[in-house]
Image 1 (cartoon, one colour):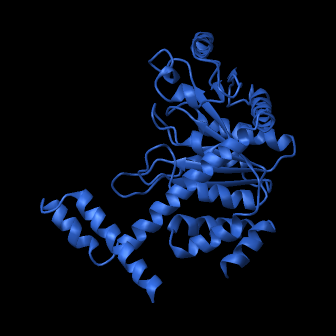
Image 2 (cartoon, one colour; image 1 turned 90 degrees about the horizontal axis):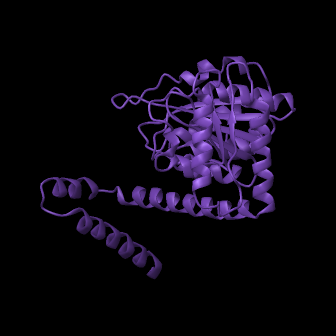
Length: 318
């Protein structure tokens, strides 16, 4: 079927069409651009990112949050990014295994994808998959990263609301105090709150938030506790996410985030298209020259760009 027909079908609720479209996005290529162009005008979803260190219980929390939204009658899309092998590129896609409790609910769509070695906790095609799920009519999309470290904060750029998950007893007093993680959180969740030390973790997080400068947008991230295995605390987390959504709208922050996201998308698209154009007949030759130190990377890049400019000028004059 054509890309436009595929988008029409996924917008009509056909889950197989949505799954097929995301598979095409993961493969990449010119066909994907036509597909995304057809889907881009549709759907306005609230994107909720869930990140935190490995072992924090993110997948279990995502399952519990999705169930809470479903109790409120809200359809939920889920994109779960799993770590992939640095050797084969394969992934277990264990998040899908952990989320079996959500199976059979027509109001939930789950897609697992491998990170393919991408730093930042997200796969390359994550944003495109979210675009397709939003076009399919899901008003809330949960994006779970791989076990992200202190500087893997891409999720803050991909999500409207970012939940940072912590657990007591992770070695350091509070992992989120370290660079990056404290700044990206819109909501803090201390999961596994039935463990010893949860009060200390909550207290330290709140202290660090109060020591910092007042948030520029006026939103003070709440620090909540949860036991994801039982669903305890998940209603309060969903309430906090919805309150943050309303805050974004009222403070005009949502428009500013949309502009920043649009600039990042345009930058990424330009980089992809330029690289695609540059990978011509001379690419391997220049790579070989760089490897043998006959030419430096900047000189080679400049030569390739000049060739593109010359070619475009010749086409314009014809």
